[in-house]
Amino acid sequence: MHTNVVNFVLVTVLAATLLSRTGSLVVGSLAAAGMVAIAWSQPERFESIAQILPTYAVIVTVLWLRGGTD
Image (cartoon, rainbow, N blue to C red; front, side):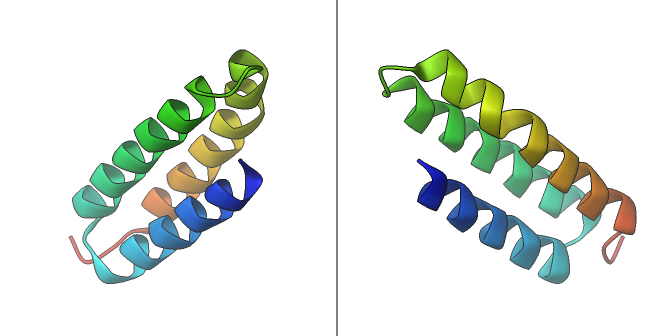
């Protein structure tokens, strides 16, 4: 699960660098949905979601506040 989180964060950082604020927010939302879907398949699904989603939300928020090309 943690390897997937790192991959999603890298994709989100790349999107924030290349896309507008709206585009990076869309990528962040889709990646969060993907992480929840992967965590949901785990036996300890709620623990996995509680561990990854808040931190990821902070990363997406900081990247969004940093701004893009909008």
